[in-house]
Amino acid sequence: MIVKNFTIYLAALFIFFYPNITLSDNNIYYVDIAYLMNNSLAGKSINIKLDKKTQFNKKKFEESGKDLQTEEATIISKKNILSEKEYLKEVRLFKKKVEKYKLSRNNAINEITKIKNDAQKNLIEALTPILTNYAKKNSISYIIPKQNIIIGKKELDITNSILEILNSKIKNIKLQ
Image (cartoon, rainbow, N blue to C red; front, top):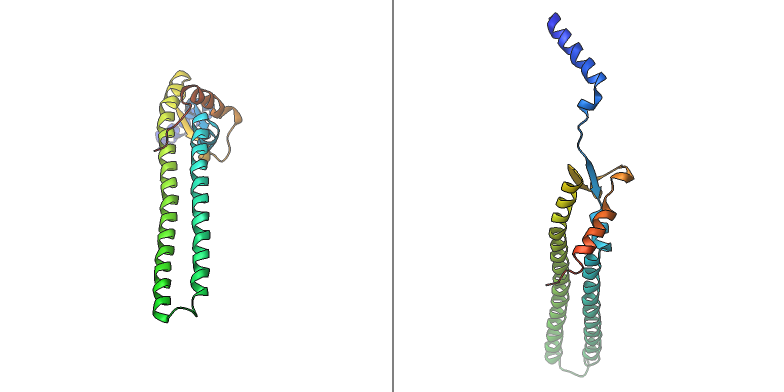
């Protein structure tokens, strides 16, 4: 019993007087991935290409939407002129066109989302070796994403250093 209490007392003194032993000497830094995605040359190229594709699709679907509205107005104006059977036939055909339009628009949105995700995945894959080499050269034990940090010292943020390296190595990511 006395030996057990002495051991606990000795361990407590050891921990109290040598706090550096209890604190690991791991170097932990963080990087803002979202910032790199939006501000690197490669990230900007992705965003520019996606914006162009989105604007093209938006313009195309706005024109198609206007055409559908015009066609709907034409069909409604023919309601009293056409027989009920012919009118219902035109309404059915119009509904099919509207469904095709909606499906096409959703497919275009999904395609852009897929392209964006693939491009960002490629950028992350290209960023991984850069982070690995940076960690080796600077004796860093851990690099964690800034999004997982609640409070951190500004000196531990290596985002700008990584941004410079990323910009020097990768200027463009091709979209699929």
